[in-house]
Length: 318
Image: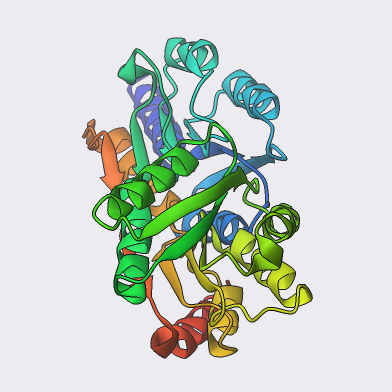
């Protein structure tokens, strides 16, 4: 009888150890692959999960909130250990996040924030300071034009996205002290190259075939690259006749800088998942609660830095 108890205890201990060793499972509701940066974020998330032995399930929402909500409900039904969301828009999340909270599944926001009356519906947000990014872009342009008049056209991100709202605000804040720099047209390019090109074509036609435009401010590099294509097709020179400043730091914007067709980009890391994984692991290990906002870094990249940045991103498999 005594031996049987020892064996039973040993088996129970082994089973407990096996259960503890089971990898964490995380469901990631990704916006889509609308930009080079977004694709890189997905790739890096997979790599960071693999480094930590985490099973990562990714659902591509194709830029639709309803697809994200469906994916989140699927992850809840599967009983994942955590849910990561790169929210396509800032509002409309309370009902599904309440379901996650009731299921006791922690939710981490990546790259973007949301607007909810109850902050406890998500555990933490890992993102850059997107207001700061817009201000850095604006400060660069104000300094670059050195007091000369400059009419700016703005390619905004997805309507309602927190990052688009914030990047617009930061840029506008930078221009408050420079009445010589004015935004004359502003429209969403939905964070895509094709839409950025389409909107820029309309701006050029509306502004004396582009002759009334001094600079383009794009909320991401992909829209900037689309704008560059439109400017070239209009017979104008991007980077010189029309200055280009954008945000993200994808390899193609560095190629444009090296070709003299872009002037500045505010770089942000695509590694939003890594800090979220670490926070989740600490929570599961000893209950450590992460900061509500985990900020990643941003930096202004200019043409003299472009080759180094391009090479580094390509080495990363960006």
